[in-house]
Image (tube, rainbow, N blue to C red; front, side, top):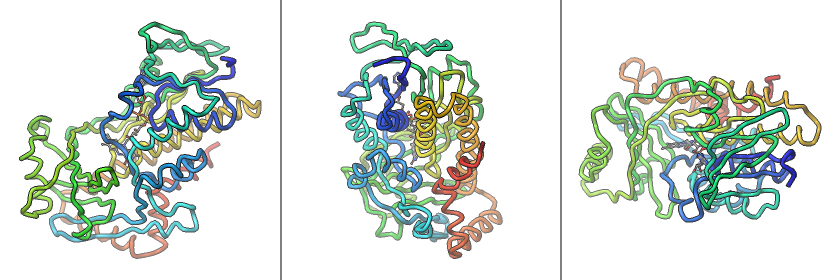
Length: 405
Ligand SMILES: Cc1cc2nc3c(=O)[nH]c(=O)nc-3n(C[C@H](O)[C@H](O)[C@H](O)COP(=O)(O)OP(=O)(O)OC[C@H]3O[C@@H](n4cnc5c(N)ncnc54)[C@H](O)[C@@H]3O)c2cc1C
């Protein structure tokens, strides 16, 4: 493989894998470096899983959608609930997008299944040199290319040459740190408790995706096909509560009973606590090194935008790298990648996830009433509902980015 015609991608998360597959399928050679090995690749904490219509269009292009649909749940609806009132505020139906996308629904399919299926495709592709059990440490670059330093499966050091280096390493990106790029933004003081429950919440009127507002304890409730078939409930935590305290079985049961008093023990199949950041890298590109996905931006999961917008970075970048290798563009197009995707990260992903949390946690009764009234009116008016869904499904963000020169 000619190193001067190859892209080094660090991280086989959803972003690194989608980028590698899109490049490889367009004839560009990739060296994909992943610290995990075959044994522990699937032992990752539960994270993303709601795949928006715009993302499904991209996954379909690389043959991944067909693998994921049978493993997920097709969910055209989502709900806003008012927890103190116990009332459904608004129901949004992606059918309003039937003329905008071939996928007028979200696919509830967990990140772990996405990387599992994508890794199989990557292993089978002759243009991808997959290095599992290989940890990227640092890199250098000059006018001709990049050299990535890695610790390989045998524990030895190795230098890997390529034309470009893309960090799909996630939030703790070494590439970003090496380049001394500021990760601008803030971290929420409250963390989020995630409880996984084997219980069918639909019998109480909930749909597969629910956003539940409450001035004291907002929550999200999502359905996953598993196995095991289960629901994920998120609650905010207080700053003084420790992980151990929060995850005690009796504390989890109490939280769930307060949320939905069934009088019977819930079957809890997992729990974890996570910290939520809202940050965007000050630059997405420095010479031949490029950031994508969580290494470039992180956000609250309320609205399901992190993995989705990261996958959109991957496809935007793949198109530009392919054009460079085909001699159809010079590498100035990578500055356009930064302009487009940084704009989306700030004006869409950050703005919307910050607002989503504020609406769910709003304490002022008058503002809550106004928010709810607006959501109800929007959901009931087909024109307003379509506009709302174009934004929440990230289709708007892609159309807007396309207009950025
Ligand atoms: C609880 C929770 C729920 C979420 N829900 C949603 C949701 O519903 N929808 C949504 O869009 N987003 C959601 N997100 C966000 C989403 O999980 C991330 O945005 C997404 O996983 C980022 O993908 P990535 O490929 O950039 O990075 P990651 O998924 O973090 O993958 C990085 C990969 O790089 C590897 N790696 C890291 N460092 C190195 C190194 N030095 N050398 C080699 N390999 C390395 C890692 O092992 C990993 O495989 C959620 C996040 C959380 C915490």
